[in-house]
Image (cartoon, rainbow, N blue to C red; front, top):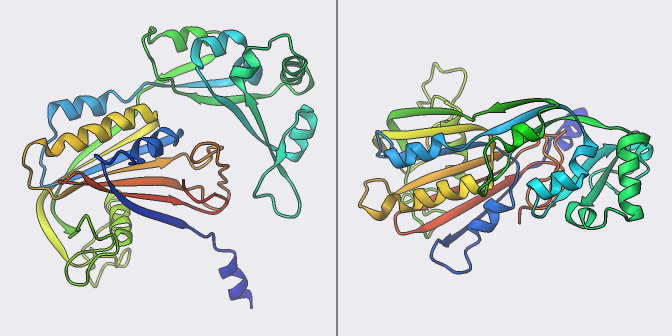
Length: 340
């Protein structure tokens, strides 16, 4: 009974796979990227490639910056000056424990993953609506709550899609607080004699002895980006995992991982460039682009509430084929809605 109880407590995971073509006017690839806001790690893998083009390498090196602000009072994010400087549209979402929520005096809703005993609440504040009604009772109440009733302070990671203003705006705006500028970390490597799954763009479920399934590729990519030994040697007591079959060995494959706070706009540019990889004939039948979200982000896609205490994963992966077909794989863990 104890074993069964522990098995029931194992977090469930959900993986959604679909296929389309970048030329299809109903393709959802941009929407999926643009609504996944909190991106922590971006990785891509290009088989049959030993070195990146200068254009792609420059794009990789220009994914930053992002900023760390220590002990930033929450009321700074609802001022008219902040909203007019940095926000075109947006919502401030607060995920609060029961005691903090009650102390703020704000109106919210119970977390959808609270269970029978509600211990977590979500407060949603439309910043544009707020900024247009600075004399309203609603603004006065929220401002009073953040400044006087429950003056909340947090350490923030901030990233801003600059549309023309000076890069130093973020640094100068928060200069009275402890703010640091960071650049994403980039890890580049060439993998030699890599055994890769054989894929067919039209077959998500694969074909026996002909091509691998999308789920098998997903597992394999996780192993590759985690630097897992895939040889499945009998004396290897760390991992017995091996490449799914059928497979083929490529002499070289180029792997790149970017870690930091990466904006959706940067990922869109990267995907677009990888799509143009096949503008000239290439040996690689496919390339991949994988994106992981922060485990403790308040949402996964859009305004879908995200929980992290039983895993925290929310990620997606594109498999880009040489005919402009693609597979899209989206995964979430416990306390998450189904991906869009």
